Image (cartoon, rainbow, N blue to C red; front, side, top):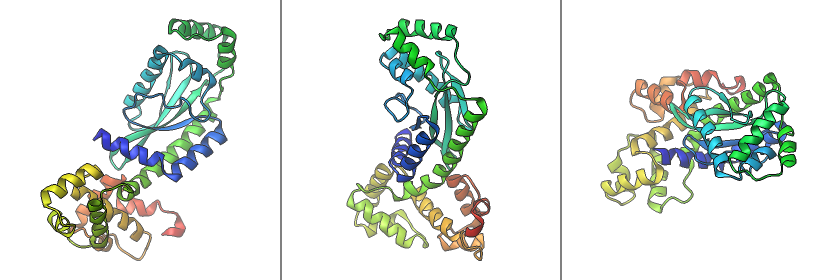
Length: 296
């Protein structure tokens, strides 16, 4: 399951909407931002736009990197439901905002590498000693200049930037199901044909055997191949396709939720409501209410 989450995070990172947001956020706030999977053993901001020069110097040595990765691990453990901020051993803070696909945590939007109050000379002395203990071989004056050149943000200002990330995380959660359904430019031809068949017949009763027959494969082979390529079992994928169609139909205020459920292929309103909530994190009615007024 972690591999599936990681591939979804990669798809989100490569999407135009994320790349545009990352660029806009960094240029506007002057802070780095990264989208990372839940379990990651890489420094999220290293080598990225607006990385702190001080953190860049510290990243030269594995012991310093290990200390940073401990902060990432702590954020992974505590930011599962809402944004969390953690201070590192050198006094800088990092913040993680959870990104969900329905009821599943799939990753974090992360920013930071800032001070929330102006650092003192004594703090730098402690940081300099730690750097030496970790084997960071940098001229003291260069390190001092980078340390005191680190961004200092008032708590309220930083909270506002984190709020922007939280809003974007909600939006990513909404579009992540689209990416699950639509990604697959490199799919094997049999899976591409299967996806096309599902799209064309999603309003009808669909069985695994029926789709396997339509693409001229055995049910066993198709089941195994479909799960391997998409990361989803057949039933879950079909439900996600139907939910995407339902999202469009919910834009029409004249259609009742029950009508939409049967239109997209669900045989039970209860099942439709349950799957909609599991995949998108909202009930169909809640989703419709949060649409812009002009879209309802």
